Image (cartoon, rainbow, N blue to C red):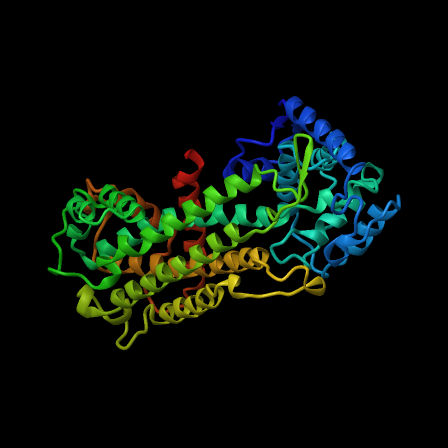
Length: 473
């Protein structure tokens, strides 16, 4: 297979993740090679006439200190490679290097194409450097990119160290992975919600197109359309005129999460293709700027986490309805067998334990403050921390949704409903999948294995149902 060309434009987050995970060989495009060489020539000429940050000056509060020391770059890499002790996972490193090459391909860094070639060699040979967390607060991944510079060897000289560091590539890699995970998980929540709707004999009026035309919030409209696609033709009469919030507000709560995952995807698409360099080489001019600030990404992550907290909260409310005979007409806690059996009583505890983790991880990272380098740098987005919190939240959210799935399928079993009884509604084959995968033993026992199976089922369903609207924008 021919290597995929990185050109500095048109790379979508999902595509970037796929290239990295499949370890697809890449190469620098010819036009990108030309752009890089021209920018390197241009910045060299500019530096003869005026100071250029990091090239002929120190950095941070040392920005006013001029230097012509040929060892300046080596010292910069050595000092800035100070990090924490925890290594990034290899999938993050691989994706981060790919993103940095694509950014360099956009031009504007002042680096020669040989620098991008050296990073590509590491990627294509699978010889990934050990890069560490620590020192990144959303104003450039300085520490790990300095480590990358040391790993590249002589291709980085005294003038090219700082331009290599002018990026949030590792943070963007974690954000892209979180984006794909969030979009995939969000797309299976309607399947689980539809199964809860079946178990609770919900009223599908809440998804009527006229309801959502009356309040056309984009994500809400899309969720309602998806639910109609799953539930239309369901031959079960509703049990109530008006359902509890877990069913009645399903589209209104999941919809904003859909909108926010789109917003994250769109922000990532911009940044992984951006020449967000400081200084930026623009034609024959060098422009000092703040494009290294990752506030758009950090805010998109914070907003997504807050919206997903509400998704998790509403899922636990459906679990509460599912274990309540007043809503299902079934036994308390969906118990079966001997009197006073506990059934899925502990599922609620597991779900709320996971919800507590979701709530903790939902706290906005952008509320942080920082004053660094003698006041020269007095703000930060904390995008790297937001990315870590998002990964933690998504893992806990998966546990919440798995708890709902196990509970809904058990209720459907106890009600004696089969996939055939749900036909022609499109939720029927998804129920068949769940019934085949989850154990049919309804006696009191540990449900840990059921939850693990449910988590795996969510992954399988996600792989079959991925829809990333931001990828087709």
